[in-house]
Length: 111
Length: 114
Figure 1 (cartoon, rainbow over the protein chains, first blue to last red):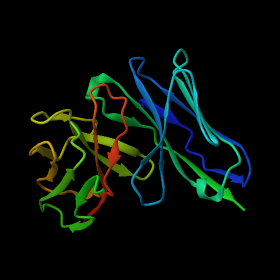
Figure 2 (cartoon, rainbow over the protein chains, first blue to last red):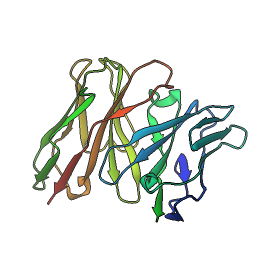
Figure 3 (tube, one colour):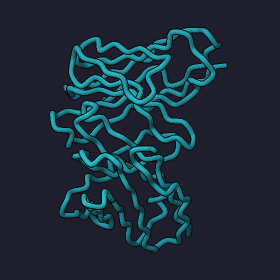
């Protein structure tokens, strides 16, 4: 079983829609949590860190539930430019804090 | 700002050939990583170096070797390339000691083994 699981999608939504991505992780010793964004044929880039209390950055809201080992990302008022693959990322001290990636969720925002 | 630089960007190898992928970062980061990305598989860790002078295996190390040449550079070597090593390879680095910091990625090396 992969350490980080995501629904691969694809999610096809119209502009202006709200979309939510979910992610579960298996290692209870995981310490840090992130959402990365990857555009086609590009490198992953940090979208936002995920904090225990939940955090918001503009149209993006991330939540963490340590008891359920569950992370979410909510995107409000979707833009065409939000089309990308969203990667759930978790790390722990076990492997030098190397990032463990989910397979990614593909989002396509249509006009 | 250079960040993380990988070379080459593209490479075609014949089965059995060897090559070294180069990675350098200019952010004074302690930790460096090599990942491969295959369709439907996501990014998988090949090797990592938590600090200068140390290297450790990740999830898929077979067929690869690494060298942490100094704090800036972390190279990945394929001694005898196989078609199964056709992939996109990403190098990454991060600073800090507690894992809570952002990782920065190079632009990737697209490797095809024929």
